[in-house]
Length: 216
Image (cartoon, rainbow, N blue to C red):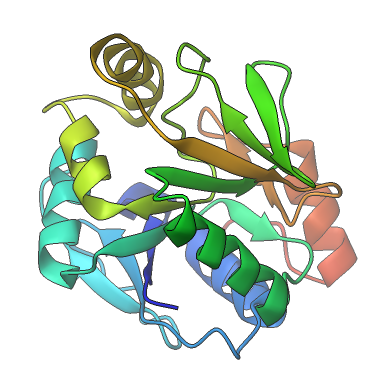
């Protein structure tokens, strides 16, 4: 499988890094041997097996584009530092997703929970294709991305939320797209933060995994 993992982060969320890394390595299938990177501004998390890309500028769009330039990959799996893994996707299942991503020449292939916000059509099994004018055709949920496509979707100065909402509208109204997702039930990760605050899932996961939830 020819892709790199790119983890979106920024220095102010440094308190998530070790917790994310612990859960990532616990649940990631080591047979899926690909390069792994995390985006920061100036800090170096020094995470086991994950290279740091320091982009300096805190602007989301600049940082991701800079990271994509530096890793020089054709495809990435996008993750974020608050995606706390809850189960393993085994090598064979992930390989199936990746092969469909390539076979269908997908622009984005999500690997995440379903949502009532999506307008989608069944493709095969638990895999769906988003219709042209669905909400969140651009989503920062865990996804395989064609890097050239992702790069073209950015607009300078946008926040992650603007990229998803405004970027989806730009995409839907400008050109056809090939966006799929494999619905995960139960989810393979849960979000530990929302709008800068810890979620209930964060505290539940810390308790279940024996992780200290307190930030010092």
